[in-house]
Image (spheres, rainbow over the protein chains, first blue to last red):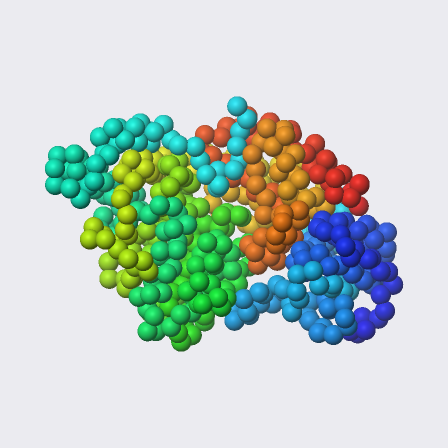
Length: 115
Length: 376
């Protein structure tokens, strides 16, 4: 699965809006050791922005984001192309279900410690 | 009275502007194109206001046009530049964090196609290299980059941006709406737009300044009097000019004061609870700062702080009808929920900041509890 191995934990946040998917993701992350791969399912239109941003703030690695149908795997960086009008919405439609794979990393000194 | 920390949405009318407006309502009601005495008085007031605004923004009086709002000035600027260059192309290049009025005007001139967006870094500053590449492409009618970002206070590198646009032969529209009256007016632009209610002038007055020699063609019918048709709002324009003059005169001392208070907010807000991050970096505008408050809905936070007596704003859209998160935060790669924008008016005191900091933890706790019962 994208070279990441099977996710060990699934967080199903479909049907709820921001900030709830990120709250559930953070709660699942807080209970697991570094190295754990989490899978987050969400259809919140804000998640496509918030999941990568939360991972950066927390120092975790977003391995992949894919449309839940299983097709159209997109890279999980936020590299943007000036020719693309929607740099942070990779091929997704509002309300579409997305699957994010996140690997938990050890706490970094540069990132503020979680509460 | 409770302090407002939503200055970027608009300021109350400055007292000097109110007095000037009352005088102009009394004496400047006539049609300034008429040759009789009343008309001449209105004309003199209008000309003096134009000259005053020109001085404040570093333009020539004949380069300054007044419109019925800042949004209208943006529309007129974008559409007029595009019309002036329609033989060259219709592409608009804009920073990814422009005000939605700029982006919608760009969509309009491109026939519904999206403008070419130059990306920004995580602080909200446009990437000059990408901008330079984008304006060099064939068929670019105009470029648009703001002076100050209205959501996070980022200062755009206008010197480099304008140089890149000039090298490509592309006119640059600078939206100075969030900056005029709070930071010195920019000098590098071909078209400059601003909105009077943001610097303590009245609502309903926008300025559109077009440098001599820049090819701009009105997208609407004009009248014989000038670039933009319609009976001029002489009292509004006089008040707008007076307010900008005073705001500009206050800049030195006032900016230092606001910057000092903003520094307190930048340092203290992240300390009032866990999981709060300041967005953007310094140097930035001295009056706008933005935070991510994780695990809260920004709109609930706005409501809670309003209940406590504080006016703030948020680019989060968790509960809005549109549910479209802020394109500015998205372009920066920031978390879009839990967004809190504080923009402080010039007369903010240290005591206002202290009462706000005292009220903030309760509002955050309530908003986080409302989001999902408890914090992770």
